[in-house]
Amino acid sequence: MGGNRDLPRPAACGAGGRRSPRCSSGHSHPRRPNHRERYATVLAPRQHPDHATQFNSAVWPCLGSAVWAPCTTSGYEDAIRAAIDLGGDTDTVAAVTGGLAPSTP
Image 1: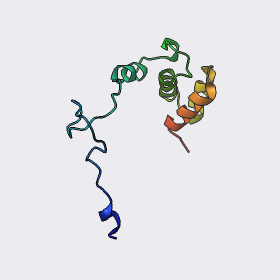
Image 2: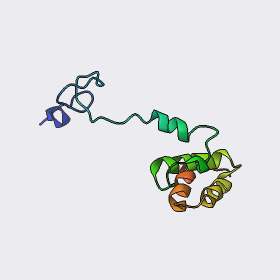
Image 3: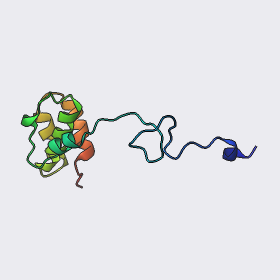
Image 4: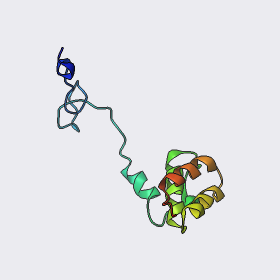
C-alpha cells in the first residue's frame, strides 16, 4: 500500500459526467444562478436597508443590512447597535455584522 498514491485521482475540477459549456475541463456542474446583480444591489454604497424588497431574514437583505451597518457607523459596537436598531431578524443581522465590522481596541 502506497498511501494516497493508491487512491483514485479526481478530475481537476472535482466532477465528472456530461460536458457543460461553463467548465473548461469538460465536466458537468450544477447550474448556479448568476448573483452578480444582487450583490451589486445590496453592496452599493448608497444602498439602505429600507430599500430592501424582502424581510431581512432573507439572505440578500441580511447581507445588505450587515454591510450597511459598519459602513455607516464609526466602530464595532456602533455597527452592532445599528444592525439591531433595524429590527426584524436582529440576531442574524447583528451576527453577520459582527463578522464584517472592524474591531477596534
